[in-house]
Length: 126
Image (cartoon, rainbow, N blue to C red; front, side, top):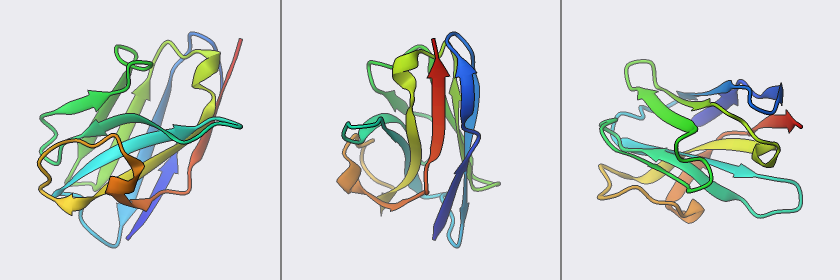
């Protein structure tokens, strides 16, 4: 299974970006999917997750109301729409696949995800 994140770049504060994660080598249909980020000098942190059905989402408090996670199981993709970006959103963003099929809930722990994309850099200038 391979995950490929794209869509990062340089944007001014208040702007928007849309990240996309394409998955090959396996279907995401039965898996929750997550987005994490890691800023320079900081630990990786949870950003958002979406249930395998697409009906439930979870966000970190720092992005709630500004970011929206979505998925297209037919295309095997997961997107992260980021609006009202702030300089503190600057980080490498990673998509990840939940290690459990049809899991009970959405996890914020990186250890509950087994496959990871290579990351895409988002830089927000002030």
